[in-house]
Image (cartoon, rainbow over all chains, first blue to last red; front, side, top):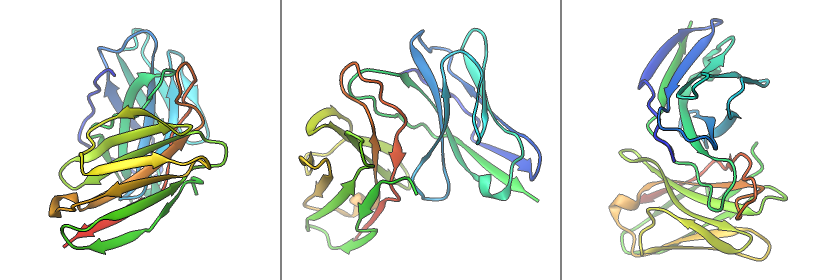
Length: 112
Length: 117
């Protein structure tokens, strides 16, 4: 699996957009970008994933650069409940044993 | 609620003892994954089962073992417990995860917190 690099921490004001960056410069052509988050010792929660096109769901948007070497997770209107550790993970979409390899993630703190 | 059920939620035991953690995957999911999260290690992948067969193995100690039963629930057995085994143990499930089968996203349970005294 390709290695990812994320800032260790970020702050965001409630109601503003939170933009979380991720670098994955060694990503291969058939690897997807996944985002998960973990709210204080709860089980990690799936947010979104994509290959090369921008993706949007009810939780967030994922913007992947054209060269696929980096991506940004966007929480359009962050709330206090979005305070969590956010993990950017790159892995194959298919293939046996498709575990997720978690790095250290970004601790997002949403404040009033 | 992810649909993944883990029991027990909390467990306190002594060094040298043996415990069993149980996981029921989401209905229809064939893969079960076990992760360990301790304060200084982050989320570490232990092992994956797909439809009863071991599919991938991570940093799982020889003192630990797991299996997936015909009804697809899984158990993680931890023996000869040491203080350093104190951690949150998460189970996750996914619909796929076999060879050539799209995995789908992983859904995590709320974890079992193990304290070894």
